Image (cartoon, rainbow, N blue to C red; front, side):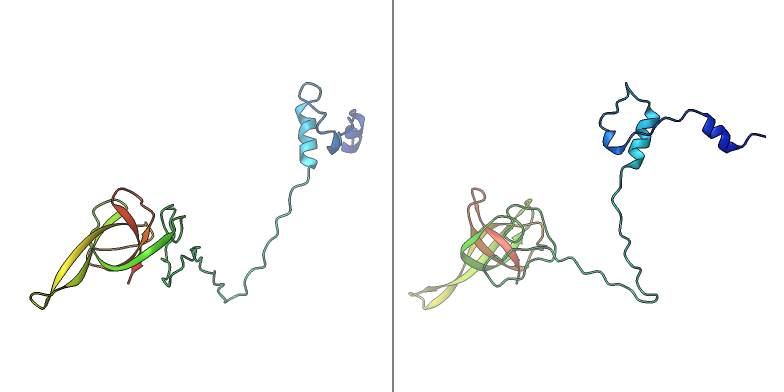
Length: 172
């Protein structure tokens, strides 16, 4: 019987190409098998395995807090984040000027709400007060959830459209 070692040694051995010669090897000059050998010798990044948690203990993951920028007023940012560029907390819209506490009248438009502000006006002739109402359109970022009848805080911003120069900051 012929030993396996003798059979292997009797076959002509080709020198394996070095990893540095991998660039020189092409399909035209060398076989695909030799290219695979060179590719197999390339080092792969080592993946580090984290230590398992102790038995019986649960590891709490830190809750992701959406990054909200400081807009300069004492108002807590919304819990959800959004990708709206006209959001004062998550976008690039700056707020300025007056801030109003108003009531939501309509949420039928996409991204805009209609709000009303009631104020009292004194009538000198009758020595009485009358109610006057103003309606404003305000941009509603997707991160703020509102319903009709909610009291919200809006603040002036640059004109976003013909009739919209306010943005909703959140519920009061």
